[in-house]
Image 1: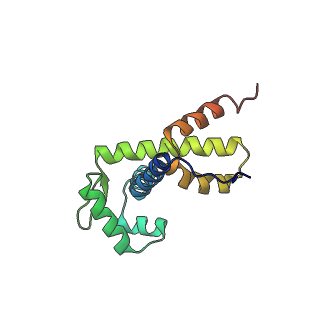
Image 2 (image 1 turned 60 degrees about the vertical axis):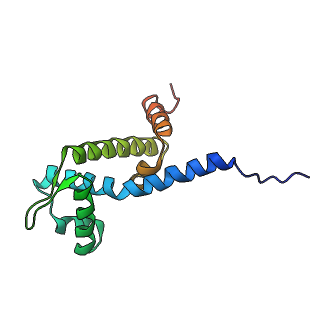
Image 3 (image 1 turned 180 degrees about the vertical axis):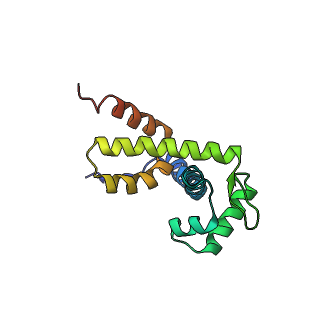
Length: 147
């Protein structure tokens, strides 16, 4: 009797795990630039203390992450000043916000409750492939196949 559990092709499986690892590496940067953009839009500025409060992390964690984001060319920081996004940081924030919106709309369309949809979309936006995201968007625009 054949084993019903089969392993996928090793190369395809490795490529899948590699994509997930890459998504994990950019996930924090995307979350930070999106929140910085939102804080600037709503409050006129983004401060480390606001980031620490909203992410539920220490000021030291925020400062370490901001140093990395500055090194990567996504933010500009100066002691005792607000945090600013570079053009690259703004572009990343806009793309992250776009992806989040598509996933959130899809989850709402399939009947996921608003609170759960928001929480799930926050993680899914970073990991969903461009192909799957395009299908989510198309299905949502078509009303999930309803006429």
